[in-house]
Image (cartoon, rainbow, N blue to C red; front, side):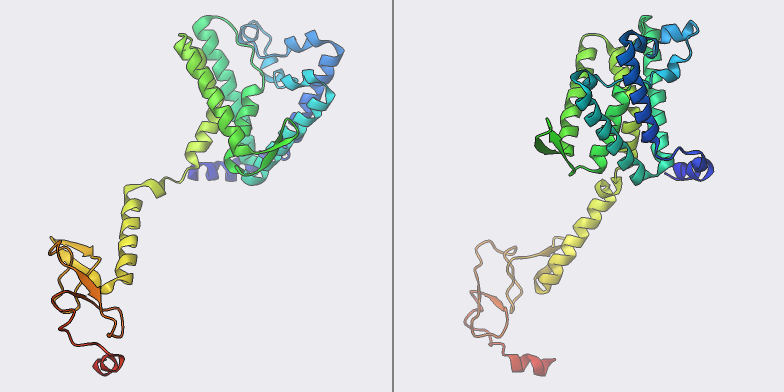
Length: 295
């Protein structure tokens, strides 16, 4: 995190504020191109083979695409654009413009790297769009705002953490399927495609709470709390400090000394005084005035 803070101080002034506004603009351009001539969009996709043959613009123009839901019509397209804009703006408000820029553009670089790996192994191009980048954004949103509710099928409210978990399971199953079929390179590519989210998720976890030192601190705290509530029942037994259930106020014996010992509270003593059966009827009753005089 220190390295990230240093980068933000040095390069933060170059961050693009309200980045999703421009991303949505690219989506709209892609949508218009599709309306004019659907075949034109195929000249914009990221195709490494064609990039190596001189069509380098594809490294940038693959951002100009229409989401798959746009096939359902203008309404679905507008809903999806609103969803992406809301998610992107929420991430930018939480992280700041520089960190959101870093997250988004690192996702683009990882996606390009994924296509390069597939091409290097198979010699075939993988026509990549923004699906993985958008999925990585959604995973980050679900991690930051797990209790936000979205309308499933525009009707049923469901918390985003459950949607994120569902998509993560589906994503993991797809990776497993590719690997089990021997297409391990596609599994690696899918992992690389959302590597920005995996880095974010690992880097933002609080590992201190699961450290051995933290477990020891909690155990000591709980023991101190028990000792505070039962100060008279704290004894040393077999070299360890132990809190007993019962302790005779006269002889000090506990249930640890003899499993057959029975203990009772005395109703005539002022306070919670417990005695073993040997001293229940033979002890001197403790009264409030006696305690005040002793003190």
